[in-house]
Amino acid sequence: MDCQHGSNYGNLFIDQMNQGNKLDDKCAWKPIAYTIVIKTLQERFIITVTKAHIQSRFKNWEKYYDIVHPLLQSYNSGSAITWDNSRGRIEVHDKNVWKERFEVNPKIGPYRRKIVVENWEDICVLFSQDRANREGAQTAFEANAEMNVEESINLEESFENDPLTLKDEAQQ
Image (cartoon, rainbow, N blue to C red; front, side, top):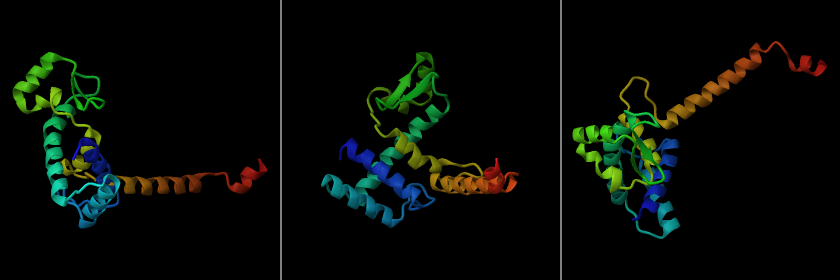
């Protein structure tokens, strides 16, 4: 399966996650998620995809995330080391910092020149909530639902606290 198909099923699994079909465990999905993604990929690309193929891809993505994310998280954008989405690789802006980081973790090396990760943003979305370890951590689905409730409450409060009524506005 080429990278294009992999990035497509990354998007498909993000859709499944947003529909609540991802379980709290690392890379654990409700069976319906696999069924929908497999069926969609087979119809779109006329390829044979199995749950085992997807799980294998997830293992690779998890490895990428576990190696690259801590490195990138320790730097802000525009700093010594960033991610280049257009090339799917680590971008080094300060060779001394890179050398220090590489000495600490040589596994990052291939992500600078050899390994291309075309769907890094999808990987971050799919794996980030699996690594949350602070109180109040949420999945994207939970955060979105909470934001919708907060927006609704804020809208209601703004109408309740607004001294002008529709009748007053019509008279102005």
